[in-house]
Length: 316
Image 1: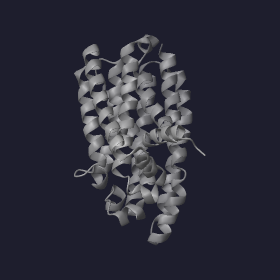
Image 2 (image 1 turned 30 degrees about the vertical axis):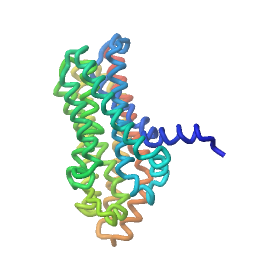
Image 3 (image 1 turned 90 degrees about the horizontal axis):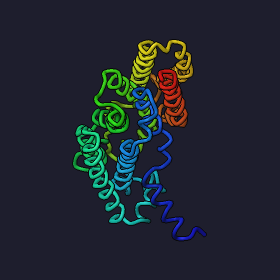
Image 4 (image 1 turned 90 degrees about the vertical axis):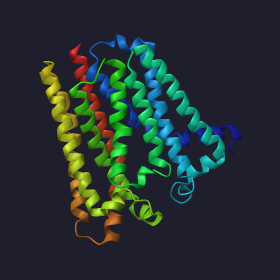
């Protein structure tokens, strides 16, 4: 039998969705490798304070989502509902509030240290959008296109720009374009995962972007997001390699090109399979292909990370 303490700690980890940390590492490291040319920045307290805030904000978003969905998750994600009720709704609420306050306090200190008040602004906006995504009355996850835009901002663009300010005095056009494109690529993949929950969300009355558009149009949108995001991301990386005169290092883009090509082909195949098919058949097809979403996210993100590390390494 699991003792009380290990079970309690397990619940604390569950509501923070620690399984997502592996996918967040590229979001953290890619902007750093794109902007840094020497390793001295890694030795500063401010840098590591920023890293802590980065993961704290993701934990805040995950916890507030578990808290808001605790009753819906009884059916579809019982391990999360069990964790919320096992810890107690008041205690989980306290953790969410404490995380937000801590993130704000630390971001004020970091903004003072680096003289970057945009850091505090990004954290405030991130907290507001993170709460608005899950909580009523806004509940942006049930607002169609707003769900897509909100996730794009709070998972990819916002965090990548936040990290950029830890190592750079200002945003560059390159990092803004790359963050937007990389987020678009990843959101295309995430839409397939969202599509997997189409019947459940429809039954629960949650108007996700897939429910709003319909399954076939939603998957078609996922395909276009993936292909546009991949092309712009890879092109931006290629330009940065060329500008920094690291042309021989462009060979490191090959794994990312192959990975993105595989993802594009896979989502296009899914799009063709459900085109014109009956809804019940389309739902089953999407659920089968959605099992590959973790693979698609991992190979596309980590191969891009390898390319950015190569750019960092050969630019020094």
